[in-house]
Image 1 (cartoon, rainbow, N blue to C red):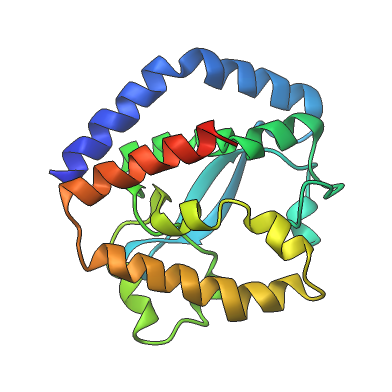
Image 2 (cartoon, one colour; image 1 turned 60 degrees about the vertical axis):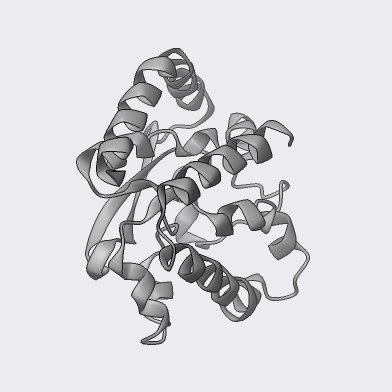
Amino acid sequence: MKRLLDVLFSLSGLILLSPLIIYSAIRVKMDTTGNVFYKQKRVGKHGKEFYLYKFRTMHANSDKVDLLTYGGDDPRITPFGTFLRKYKLDELPQLFNVLRGDMSIVGPRPEVKRYTDLYTAEQRKILNVRPGITDIASITFIDENNLLAAQPDPEKYYIEQIMPEKIRLNQSFISSPTLFNYLRIITLTIKKIATR
C-alpha cells in the first residue's frame, strides 16, 4: 500500500509541479557553472548505497570543503539556492528517486556512509526501511542549519546531539508504520514549510 502511494504521490507531484521544476532548473543553471542537479551517494534500505538527487544550491565542488552547511550565510550557497533551501524545493528531484524505488515519500532521511558507519547495531535498524524525502526528524529539525551555525564545532554537535535524536524520532515512526502516520507526516511537512 505504501509503495503504491509513493508512486501515485511522486507521479502526481512531478506532473503538477513540472512548471516549478522547469523554472527552478533554469534558475539553477543561471546561478552556477555546475550541473543543474547535484547527486550524492547516500545509504538506503539494508545499507545499499544509491545516488540521491537535488537541485544544485551550492557552487560547484563545494561539498569537497565540508559535508554540512551552516546557516543562511554560508558563502558556498548560491542566491537562488538560498530560496530553494528555505522552502525545501531543492528536494523536488527526489521524486524521481521515489519512482525508481530508492526512496519513499516518508521515511528516515538518508545519510552519507560516513555517518551511518557510526550507527550502533540498534540504530542501524532504521536502515531496514526505505529512506524518505521527509520524516518526523526533518520537521523537528527544520532549522538545523541555523542550529549548527551557532556551534563551535558543527559536525561534532551534529554527530553527538542531532543525529542520535533524529534516529530516535525515526525509530518511533518505524515502530508504528501506519497509513495515518504516513499521511500525517506529509501534512505536517507541508504546513511547516508553508509557514516559514
